[in-house]
Each structure stands twice: as structure tokens, then as C-alpha cells.
Image (cartoon, rainbow, N blue to C red; front, side, top):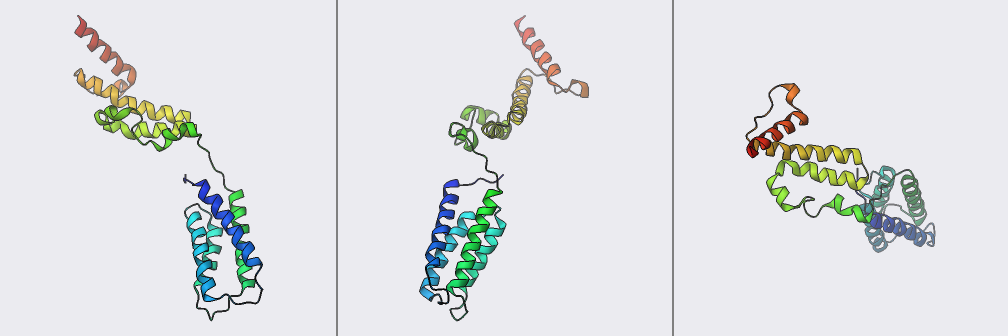
Amino acid sequence: MIEVNIGALVSATEYLAALVQVVASKPNNAQISPDSRKIYLKCFESVSDSIKGLDLKASEKQLDRLIANLEAPPEDQFTYDNFKKFGQDCLLRLRDELEMTKFLLIENSKIGFYEQGEPLFGDSVAAQYPSAHSDIAEAGKCLALGWFTACVFHLMRALEVGVAAVASGLNIPDPVKPAHRNWGYVLTKIKEAIDGRKN
């Protein structure tokens, strides 16, 4: 999955549309001056940077072609007519690719579960059970994305770390027989050990 800054993507699309409009007012056969090339180059490089890594391959390829033409020596024939065609094609490709792309929205109330500025179960749990940290973090991301079955799967794996720690603290050996390697057996042994301490 790719994380997308929607604000930057919308700005890039609007910027590209505005550039196409500006270029449309120029005389078709006029050559693009070196100074104008530098200005346009910076603009299109900015748009290209905004869509890099978003799997919009056709748009990226056409933007790269346009940038290569702007970087070419001034004596190379690159008129505003050519520029308009490249620019309009870039915009059409970007719109088409965005229409074919699905974006998943994480609700504002759940962003903290996805980005996790601090450990979800607190610093104490993260420090005492470092081997569970990855599954706890993944559980939070799955919760944010609405993947509840996957969330429970990761929480069960994290809980296994806690159960193993309790068993170890009660001096319960790790099960050897495959039939005993399950929560029911281990929890029964934990209960027996705790009940034994009460007597």
C-alpha cells in the first residue's frame, strides 16, 4: 500500500492545469526562450516530484519527456505548439490514471492508530515485552484500516508473548508435545500453578 498526501496531489493537478492554461495563450510557432524554459522546468519538476512513487507511470513518463525537452539545448526546436500538446497530454494521463486509482481514507479519529507517535499500549508494555511491539503496532494499523480480523490476529500473537511470560514466571516449562502447544493447555497449567500457590 502507498501512503498518499492528497493535498499535495490535488495541488499538483491544479498546478498542471494552470500551466496548461498559461501555455495555451502563447503563439503556436514561437520558440520558448531559455529564461522561460527555466521557469517552466521548475514548475513541471515540482509537479513530477508530487506524483513520484504513486504508481502513475504513464503520467510520470510523459512528464519526464516534457522535462527532457525543456532541458534540451535552446537550439533544439521546441515550440509552444509542441509544449501545449505535451502539457495537455500530461494532464489527460494524470486524470485518467487518478480515475483508475482507488484511495482508502483513514478517519481522523483513527489516524493515531495508524501513525502511532507512541506505543499503543504505553511505554511500560513496549519496554517489558519488546517482542510483542511489532504485532501491537500492526494491530493498530489494521484497526485504523477496518481490517478487524487481521487486527485480532495480531493481538492474539501479542497476547501469546504475555502468556509465555506469565508461564515462565510460574516456572512452567514450554510444552514439548505438539498436542500441548495450545492456549488451552498452557492456561490450564497457569491456573494450576496459581491455585497451587494459594494452598
